[in-house]
Image (cartoon, rainbow, N blue to C red):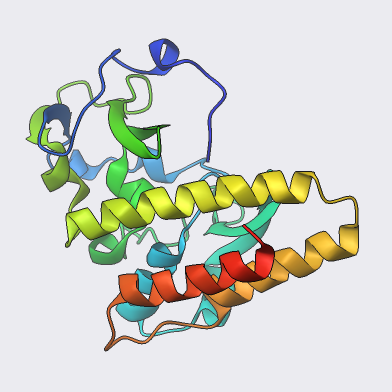
Length: 221
């Protein structure tokens, strides 16, 4: 999700690479779960997030939509996001102790926090959000270690690919005057990258690239 603010407003003014040290380590959060509450629809998921959840929870995207996830429109594109618990306004995956129940396969946005991504020239770097985490005694940690995602280079390439695909899709839908046609495009993207499911025994990134090539061909992107 893009934020219409300047880096100076929300960060320490620095941009970080994967091997840089950044003051992000909350030391297991020490019982705090503030960042898992009041998030609304902002924890938008990408296909790899859903793949990890399906695999980790041994379930399907359809099952997750019944209570844990929901679909909403992000600048014209329908995408899934983590659902907040009704009446308590907190992530449905938080347990009774206020701890993450899906920590090993938590979504990418959760892994990043309190970092964000700054996209430029079909690449990105990281920035530290200074007002998002109330813990001010954080320790320095290498960015790549903090994000805690295997096959970092493959994941980095995937993140860039998906970001610019969604950006192009938003532009395509914005220029589409036919609402029914826009709906069909959204349904096609949802089916291709979310509802169809992913083969556990095959490399996710290879599967993703095959589907992406097919989707771009169908959409003329």
